[in-house]
Image (cartoon, rainbow, N blue to C red; front, side, top):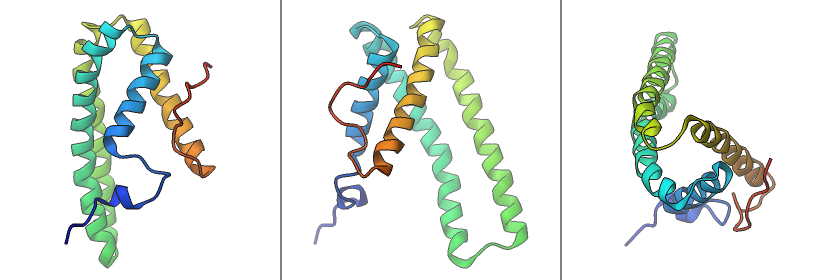
Length: 144
């Protein structure tokens, strides 16, 4: 028997990871005004960073799920808080380490636009999900 991944069984409100990345790339490209050449150079490095951050976060999420099954002692809760803070610092360091790579591809003004577009993407995604709609439709997103 074959079991489909969990994302495929959650219904129409959720996207597959490759759909998410495609919509995110399209959204950021449009909002930040990236050219095709800029997007082609930028996004492989961008998604490399996102993968590294996901791995860091994944280790903490996995441990939290394991500990949550049996409940947490105060010592375990304190340890989890410390690990979460450490993971956030590692993610921030990763972003700082990748910044020169991004600056070699794009001007600082476009990198700032990308940061604003990332936030707008997450906000619209959550708003649409709360309203029971597809996370982000195929229509172009409005400019702010």
